[in-house]
Amino acid sequence: MASSRWSPLVDGCRRALVGVAARSGTARTALARSGRELTEAAERGRAAAAARQAGVADTYGGTYFGEGRDASGDREGRSGYARYDRVASNADIAGWLLWRNFRVRTVLDVGCATGFVVEVLRERGLDAEGCDLSAYAVDHAAPGAVGHVRVANLFAGLPWGDGAFDLVTTLEILEHLPPHRVPEAVAELRRVCGGWLYATIPSFGPNRSGPDGHLEGKVRPERVEHYRDLGPEYTGPVPQADLAVDAEGRPVEGHLTIASFEWWTARFEEAGFTRCVDVEGRLYADIAPADLAPYWNLYVFRLPGADPAAVEPRQPGRTLAELGLHHPLLGS
Image (cartoon, rainbow, N blue to C red):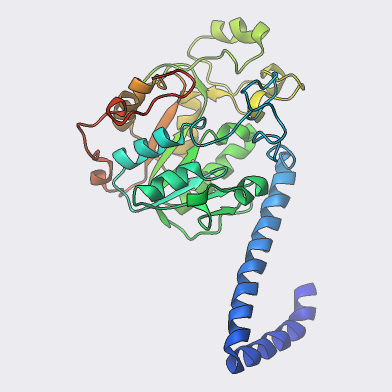
């Protein structure tokens, strides 16, 4: 009813603006710019509302990304980053891994933070875009990602069309969602995915393609043995009451879903993806020289009809060691 009541006014304003734009090039430029800014403001509003509904509206501001913290690296038991930069985030390794193993043209990094991976991929010649629910992160985007990252929220709907990207990535993101919202988020990832999806998700239990996951640091220390005793048949997710917490009593790093490799695999399969453990094994071998294999619980999924040639590696003889890339916290 409300939209019907306002329709004549909206239509009248639209006709007036069209008339002004038709008469003046300066007006056309101003209206185009205003339209883009209004669209961005609306997208930010939808993302913020979805973040409030999900209970994470105040979690990923400046403090999470190191603002006002001791940059020496001491987090004092708090979640987030004492410092957040391209080296500490391992963005160069993540970007190289994606470039090397996916022969694609377009990439969307969902949960891109300040866009370091987007920056690396664009430097390597890929048409990479990113989005994050944190307005702070987008407003402090890496130089090479400026103009290619925007505020968006999976639960509000991403501002791209169906199958818009050859490759969709989501790195250390989905565990921040409550378990009952995960299927909805995966469905939206599937909507914008045109073929391939790469994810890293902290997981526990047996892994078909690489190192098994672990419970330490994810579950309250006094409950680790309990969940270990449940054996590989237990897939999770771990109840929130048993999740590890930081010094402020909040789930460590904002992680709300701690589950097994098989639980996460099932959520993607429900959305129509197929897990590609052979490709995952190759990626684990690629990151082994950086000692990251035990820490990155990675997944590769494809959709029906995805081009298998897209996962033929570039420069198969090159290694991270030859490129001089290593885990910054572990040394070369």
